[in-house]
Image: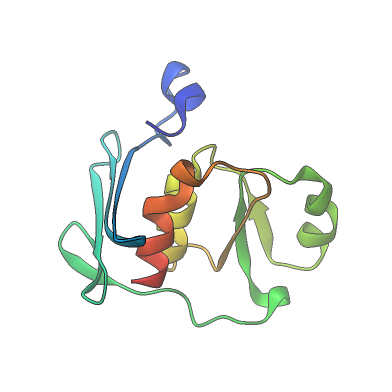
Length: 127
């Protein structure tokens, strides 16, 4: 589970995140946010989906026009928040990656986070 503190405090931004790696490559990913009733799924080379509908990443490439989500790396916040539309912290790296995969955010910023927190989200974005 990712976003444990959120879960404990009744915040809906938590999720179960599962990734399967085959021969060293992320192959399948699932992120389920039960409170939000959102199920994200990706299969390598097959695309990414939210509740069965195909999703895509944002086409925004200009930082000044970007809506960012972040999990760690507070030292970067000041620079990023001044050079983007907004910067939010959801408290769940899995959901923050899922938001990028579904164009709810343009980029996810983090530093020093364990791979298991973002593995499923990485494949959602890469597909």
